[in-house]
Image (cartoon, rainbow, N blue to C red; front, side, top):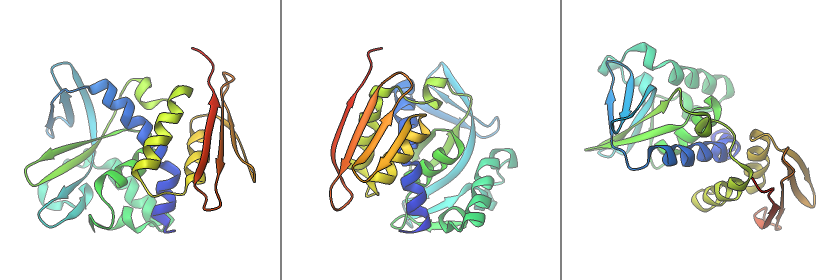
Length: 221
């Protein structure tokens, strides 16, 4: 497993949880990005500061980090988070975070943004345009988007992650529960997660490390 794949497995579920919460908040609103003010507007009523991540080009099948897009004269204040990710990648030996450009068949914008979300605590938005897409993080969002998910949402998040990505199941489960504030017992028989409200999640794995059973007792709200 590469350094990036390991990092992805540790952060993808919490990143996905934020994306699902953001989707609930935004609904079907359209988006408009204003780089002069460093904000994005959704519909007529939601406006948030942004930090740029990067862009996907469908023409040549590449990702370009925002800090490497030197020809666009981007305000440096919008690149602070991407710059921090670059330094984190250099320090931790994660080349996908520190190389200026990447092939999309190696790693796409969603995977990079999910890792970034896990590392920085911010959800992201993918805005498509003719020939590509721009990715950026949103700031100053409600706590229901950036905070821990309700215990009953754990099953939904884990299900979506494990259906969408080839990842180490145990790493995903343990990391997600710990990041969400659960007390986790990780042993040979499986994983037991205990939430402060009394909810419990039990996960067992087969001989290949895949989830074989996922059950739980969720306290009524």
